[in-house]
Image (cartoon, rainbow, N blue to C red; front, top):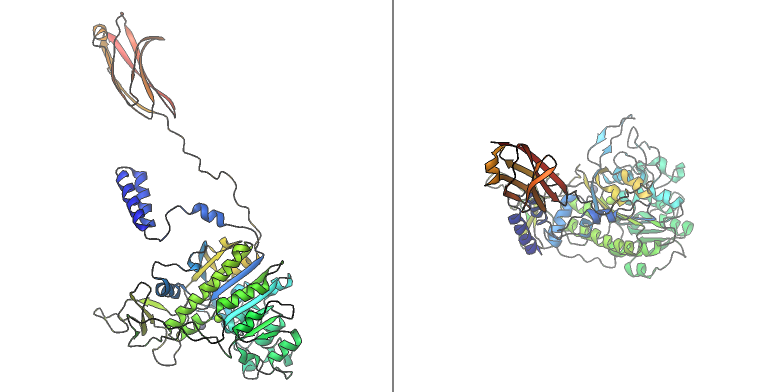
Length: 580
Ligand SMILES: [Mg+2]
Ligand SMILES: [Zn+2]
């Protein structure tokens, strides 16, 4: 395929020699050649993918800490540099800013250029910015001072009668899933126990608050909750029983704890589903490969698949959630591949890479549903950038130029068979230190109704209105085929002697030379007043003819060239004086 493209391009290049317009086409061909499977103009495909209707259902897939650096690293490793994930192939892709605020007196809060997962998830959940560690609450003067509660997409859709789902490979009370359906001043307040709630005293139910994140999630009666974090639900509520017992008795949640139990659930008729598959976070796809100052791994190192026991994969959970949520009124489902971020914090190249693949596999499940339900909007994005960098090979060792590959590095053999070195440089390379988030914009991609709204450079908070469905805009109507450019009229040049004797006019005659473009017929006529004295036709490009006049004439004659072509008729005239 690529070979054919190259041949075609070379042929165009030859034809184009000396032709400006065709030269530009050849340049376009050179651009196509570096992009796999992309040879034709995509305008019509993109136009066909634009759907201005409001979505009936929304599936939001988040890779925590999943920026273009870790996506590229994962792609190189899993598919090779020229490979493409499903998330790479969505019709609409844009860039998304993720900045947040810092606590202060307001209303102009200082900007926080590197956000954590709480304000970022609050951003798309509520359409508003807030401060680090805060969940779907506005900014305030200090971390322990609660802000104003902001209504979330999940809450709005719940009110509309749509079903809702929340899936994560982290503890389900972790910041990203928590922002969808809880309001609390600090993300650490995950369970109702005294240690977790120490920094959120006013949120305690015994203090008249909404309770811990674990309690708030089930109080929202989310239809399907799947993830890790049993330890949070094992904590006692202020009223005495555990959060789990509270969920089961008060809201009739059905507990599932392994993949086979999850597989066995086929209905929400017996109550909403609470899947808690691990005490804490769920197990990443791959065993760790932790970067070190000396350089971990090498040109033959590959990632090893972890034993996840009876835990379902993110794709398993997404598949079951969609099956249970599917209904006539539609649904909102948030799915998080959480461990990309957590393994990046741990300088774990394999752990982070594997859970980008888990995200992509979950996307494929969502796409299978969308194929049968085209009124479903799918958005895939991250929440903030992270520490992963792809650097020149050579590990952390200072090379001949004095450059280093990073404070800690790990090298892997990619699907190309070549070594790729990943570096982490946002924290000291000592045991126990955590790599930090970074402040770059990140990718957002989408398909389905209103997916085109993610293109360009948007802000995280813009996803809020897009997910809820913006007022549909009107697509331009008009010709679907290109109007051909009008054919130009012929171009005529005329050369004739301005003087000739009567004798010369008899023989050899008046020489008239024409040069014509764009004509199918060319005629040269010699006129005296309105009377035709002589005429001759040339080829369509013109040429030289001799017009002879035997009768005696005098005065000034007129030479007329008439060129007729598909673009019209063009005439040109000249005067000839007949002398003695
Ligand atoms: Mg998260
Ligand atoms: Zn993080």
